[in-house]
Amino acid sequence: MNRKPELRGRAARLARLFPTGSGQAARTPFVLLVVLLLGGGLIGLLVLNSALSEGSFQLDDLQKDTKSLTDEEQALQRDVDAYSAPDALQRRARELGMVPGGDPAFLNPDGTVLGVPSAAAEQSSVYAPVIRPPEALVPEPAETSPEPAPTSAEPQPSTGQPAPTGAPEPATESAAQPTPTSTIPGR
Image 1 (cartoon, rainbow, N blue to C red):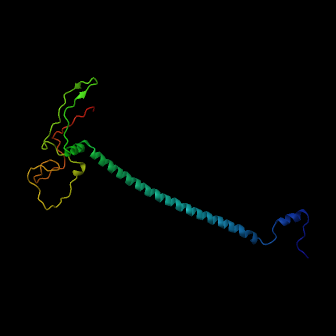
Image 2: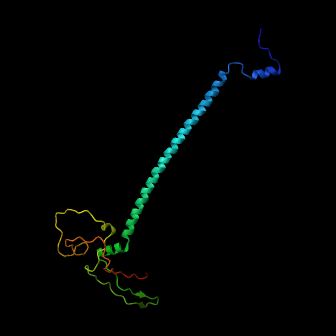
Image 3: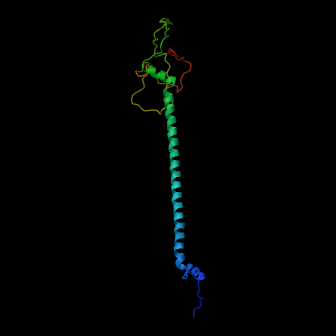
């Protein structure tokens, strides 16, 4: 005898929709799919986390590079400012043999001359104050040289200044000596 009653009609059609075999065969693909999705999600999060941390390390390195380049730019700008300072320009002009100009004369639109021009005054190198660039103000370590320091007051060929007499020059400029200035027309 059959223990299970036989279903007819509508009940039989509904009974055919439910699986009659063991439930393991239907659950195995579903469980594998869920495990694969969870594993893939975890691996994806790990890869994303690694990429973000790598990006933060690169950002940190780039910020350090930016800071060092900014510092270098500021140092170069200080050098440019030091070389374009009026004292440095005056020193370099004197090294080239230039002297401040005399009084200028101006031409009016009608062709008349306004003012009395004068030639540039020749200045002696004894009067010219010693102007040092900023990098020369930093004391340098003592160098050992085989030749003795000159003791006479002969002018040096490069600067036209008297040679030192054995006493070191002060590291600061003398503010007591006046500095001649040149007149530039139109300014």
